Length: 113
Image (cartoon, rainbow, N blue to C red):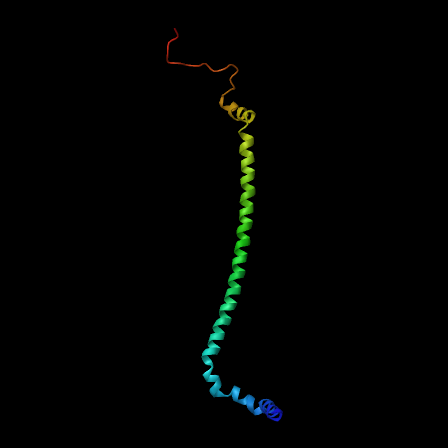
């Protein structure tokens, strides 16, 4: 039994057996499989390029969002600063408006009794 196994392994390792895997008939017979492998390789490459492009787009968007966030914070702080009472007085003074020194009068539509 061991002599049969050694004969099978030596016959499998001989040069003539490898030729039958690379002849015209087996290559033509496996063309659909080779095409399938080619399509898979193209899809794999496309997926890698698409992922790289998407990562670049995301990083650009993140930079833009950070810039807009900084701009928002700057404008918000400026609005808060300008809405202070002292700054409002300075802003309307050139128009001739002044701060009231006495309390406002209360108007009512009923006559006092």
